[in-house]
Image (tube, rainbow, N blue to C red; front, side, top):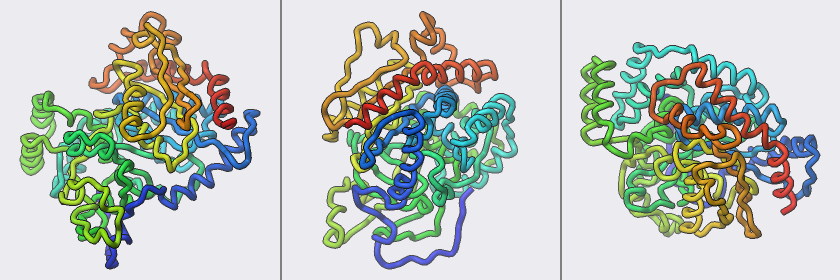
Length: 466
C-alpha cells in the first residue's frame, strides 16, 4: 500500500515545505500547457476570446456517496459528448465525487477515452465483486502503520464495497502526465481546526504535485504526504498512501459524529477475524480517530528565515499529527480550491449532488468568501425554487468574482414533481446501487448538461468578455 525508498534529506526545511500563497510551479506549467486545448475547444465552439485572456474554467463535483460518483461520471461524459470537456482547466472534488475522479484518472487519457472509461466504470460498479480476502490483505498492511485510523477501515470495507476496486496506485504517479486531462484537485479538511471554528484555514487540498492547506498557503510534495516531519525536514522515507485510502479520506463523512458506532461494530463482527486489526480498529473506534497523518508543519522554527510561517495557526506548528476528514462535512463542494485567487478562475461549473437543500453548497461558499475576504457573486433564488429547483442557475455580478453556474442534480426539468421520490431512491448512506439505478442516474445527470449546452456556451462567452 505504501512505497518506500532510500532517501537523503538536505538541511533546509524550504527544500520540502513550501510556505507561499503562490501556485506550485508544476501546476502553473500544467495549466499553461492546458491552455492550448482550451483555446482549440473555444474555437471549435465558435467562441471569441482575447488571446491574452483565455478563460480558466473549473468543474466542481460535490459530495453525496455513490450518487455523487455516478452523477459526476454522467455529467463529465456528457460534457465530452457535447464537445465541452476540453474547455475545463480544473476538476475539483469532495467526497463521492473524488471516487469518480480517482477512477477516471487511472487512465492517463481519460478525457479522450471517456465513453469507454464510463462503460468500464459502470460495469465495475454493476458487476464487480467485493473480495473479503483482498480487503483483509489491504487492512493487514494498513494496520501496521502507527497512524492507522477508522479511515483505513472505512476505505477497505465501505468504500471498496461500493466502488468494487482497490487502487494501489499513488496520486503522485500522475505528476509527470501531460495536460490531456483537466488538472485534478482532491479536498479534505483539518478536523481540529474545524472544531476550533477556524473554517477558512482548515481546508486541505491534494493534487498530483503537492498537498497542503489551501487558505493558509503551506504545502509539501504529494509523494511525502504521510512522512513524519520535524522542523520542515522528513524524518522517515516517503509513505504516501494509495488511491483507495485517498478515496476513503475524501469520503469519510461518517467521521463527523459517533452516531454510527453500532454499525461499525457490526461490520467488524461480520468481516474481521484478525486479532490485530480488530484490536486497533476498536481502539480507533473508542477514540473516534479518523484520518490521522503526520503534520509536515510540526515544530517549524526560524521565522526570521521564513516570515510567512508567522501567519500559520499555532496548532499546525505544535502538533506532530493532525486528523483529516471529508470536506463535505463543512462545505459539500470544493469551492475553496477553485476560489484560490492564484488560480484566477473565471467560470465555475458546479454540479451539485447533495441530498437536501439544493443551494446549501453555494450559500456556504458565499459565507466562506465573506469570512475569507474573497469576491463571490450575489445569490438570487426565486421563492419556491429552494425545494423545487430548476436545472440551471447563473450567479454573476460586476465584481471580480467568477461566474458561478449551478446544476442541482434532481430538478423540476428532469424529475417533474417526483424530486422527493428520486432523493429517497438515491440516499447517501445505503448499499451499492443496482445496474438499473446507475443507468437511470447517469441519464438524469447527463441531461443537466445536454439540455443546457447553449447556456453553458453563453457563460463561457461571458467569461471571455470580461
